[in-house]
Amino acid sequence: MSELINPSAEDELITVTLTLDNDEVVECAVLTTYTARGREYIALLPLDENGGPMDSDVYLYRYEEKNGEPALDNIDDDEEYEIAADAFDEWLDTQELEELDGDQ
Image (cartoon, rainbow, N blue to C red):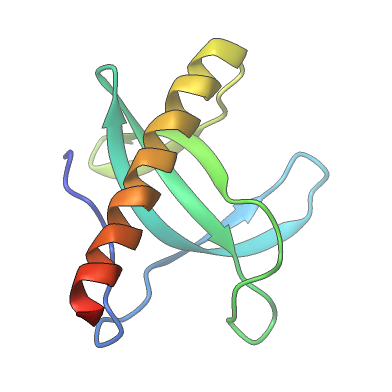
């Protein structure tokens, strides 16, 4: 399950619908799932009403499958969040390098 979900332009965008703590419903694009220190995480990018990326932060959640269904859990611990955020930043750096290599 450490496989990255990273649709290319030809692939269909994978989305999930989140209900936030304030009952706001947000449609998000799945950027990737990744492993950090033995735990699985998912990075979600909020989308606007037209399906385009919003100018906001990426949401990071703990990710697992329960009974074959994806499940997201909040990351409540600051130290765990730092670990998840650092691993996501490393993934972003890798994506940027691959994009630069593809441009050459």
